[in-house]
Amino acid sequence: MTVTISRLYDNYADAQRAVQGLESAGVPHSDISIVANNSDNWYNGSKKVDRDGDGVDDRAEGAGKGAGIGAGLGGAAGLLAGLGLLAIPGLGPVVAAGWLAATAVGAAAGAATGGIVGALTEAGVSKEDATLYAEGVRRGGTLVSARVADTDRARLDAILNQSAVNLRDRSAAWQKSGWKTFDPASKPYDADQVRKERQLYGAGIR
Image 1: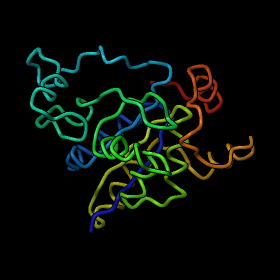
Image 2: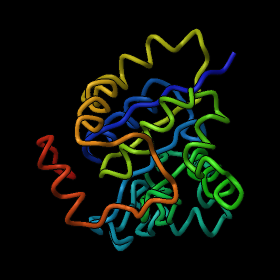
Image 3: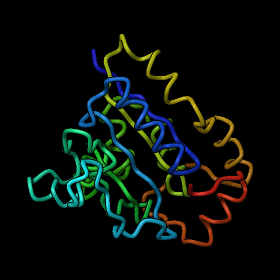
Image 4: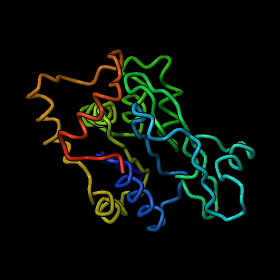
């Protein structure tokens, strides 16, 4: 049986390490997804990714092969070579790669619960957790999700738990400031709001 495991990270670097840990543990990058807030434009798409050392941006190669978001690029490139910029309702601009981002964008047009929440619940994540993950990304965080065999869950959970946000504690802090639930129709956080949120929890983007 396949299950979906997800974690929220305060900064992209921690999420990046989690993705690399999953890949090293044998999880195919076609089963991993990353969605990172980009309200402050930390990623502008101009950074070259050349992990196979051929002098050509791996993302361009992937696009040339029709890979795009949601598809693995193969070889040493891994999931992170397929990063792309897009917008998801309620989250605003994000940097994303993998199946979850593709599902969220596809579901965005008609999903009453919002693209990211709908995509997560469709993948088996509880509605309660899905709304917390979505709000976490909206406030500047990075979400990593993976589809894994249930028998591998404990081993892979341990990899994801390193540097992950305690979702219950974080949502309790949000609720103290008046937050109730993720609203896909709400205005996305701007760069200043994201910066303040990261300062609140001592998190930088890298």
